[in-house]
Image 1: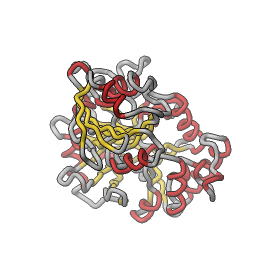
Image 2: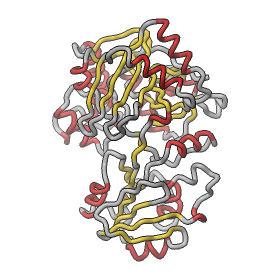
Image 3: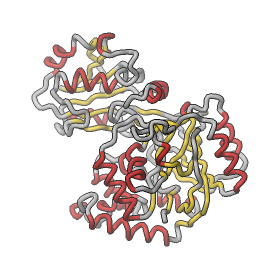
Length: 413
């Protein structure tokens, strides 16, 4: 049974104007700290001044070490100012509905139920009966950095994206009926992709009980985005983490590509080395972003190749090994380029908010040696990995659009 609890003290924008000023992409959607600093120059009220306080400085060259005592102290001050700001208010004992209206997916209504979830519900070796199933390995130092920020600010701002099967659409229909019954409390527009992010706050005791009951029929939930954020809450000992449950079939997935540093690599060498595991085709295209799984784009020396894994390249019964990024890691990065660690610094992960033209330009400018484009993982692939209790290959799923930070926050203590 999946459980969601009301947020005891939710910090929220007072209206849509405030929501627009405060909310932002999550910290891990940026390619660099410089990008975060640049956003803060044009959106100084952004919640990034709390979640990435080391970037909240007058000049880029003055940025502090991430996680340093000075940065955490700055985050503490900024959080205190955010609580006292005229742009926010505290709402007690609240669940919330979160709808993402994506112009790229007309006719799809992605709406979820948000609140707090016990960290003990996460399935681990210590809690094998947990109903929240992770599918990605955790880097302790990354989770520890987020935990330190929770400690310093007394708040949970990063939201974990959970998906549920909702086979009979009961959760989806209940949420839609509620949302269609009254206007949202506030919304914000993502000007990059045009998506709208709408929030309904639910404080009536009977309405909360109804929504919790509908969600409770779900046997499991899967972490779609935010494994480290949930781990950080567990490290901090809050007992709960902030989340939204979305019906899985309403969620969108975008490509998660790679830029690779491999000095001296040539196209001739790659084609020779990959012939046994891939069918290889030369493409006369300026950009290539695959749409179907098991089709992979490779750009180097000013041209694109299309790679199709042969049947011998992966075990089709193993859901994790069937993911294209895992096939690529084993047969290209490890076997050919000698990059054994899938999180090695030679690999730069590029989310769905950047296209193939961006990847090509990075290679052409000499900042990387080759680019790889992958089709989005399907929601069925994602769920099957979870059901098999396996771990997704690192940086293989990019859910799009993503939850915005700063629309609903949880105050602790």
